[in-house]
Image (cartoon, rainbow, N blue to C red; front, side, top):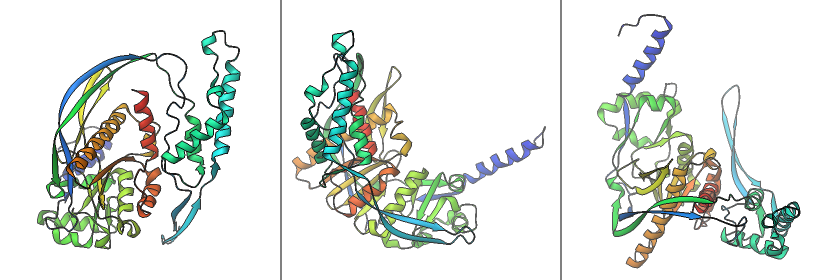
Length: 418
């Protein structure tokens, strides 16, 4: 290629050419046929029908109709690891400690809930339109508010009688629902026809290019045993990736102990920072000891769930492939990883992924129960904000019924769109 015009263009073109050439260098995440960490997954075969309906909402704000507020799982004393790095030498020192979160009694939260409702009633008392004058405190007495807080805690499996600051805010935020006069809802009704069994041996090979690894867009996790499995044509590139002073440090992590890497995949490729952090948690010794095995899903054509959503006024359909499967006893934890920013800024598409997936795994669990198959699937959207809670409950054997902050946010949005 000959570059004319300004000299600055030469460097930009050179960078582009280098990236194109780097696409030829790749590392592969293939399945180890005789791995001890293979397991079976179950899916359902569906037929689908389109259903469109229009509905109208009338009347005052509808508050706390269920008698509880959906809360994420909480831990009041959190195990944390603090990493110190010396600025001059770069040496790292880690130590573990416990962080105690601020908590409130049920009565304290109920009193604040009641006062806010009381304020709303007082502010609306002089409204010209009688329908705008609210009387929430007649329905939600102090005693009823305590019942709602208690029911919310019971649903979230909070047994200490205390609510963390974060969950306190979620209870108070329940007083601010949206009201819409009308909306149109388009859904695909899915009818399961047959139960499907899928082995982790069937997952296809995944790849990461040199450019993706160098930039840290993707991170490859591997053990010392991976070197013996590298394809011949990838060996020189793998040597370059392993170089501690090379160009690929941002996108590679060595798991020193093979027993902490409990996946049937020779290498795991994590997409973006939240997934990278999640894989680190999976490979920590304390967590690895309580997990039977796990697998990173393929982005398509291995395990997917059909869903539908509206983009503007246009109905859309897609296939959603959750990121991870974790097996612990007779429970498969199905995990979709997102960034913390998506808790408050989630898309309508993610709401539908959550809604369809939740319904899918409910149906799947019912089907497995009828077949006498002792396996339960639990689905969660997970962000880094909930990683510590998730893994601590997993270690403590209390992961059943876990709900993340994003699960709660998505469930609220799904309900508002009903």
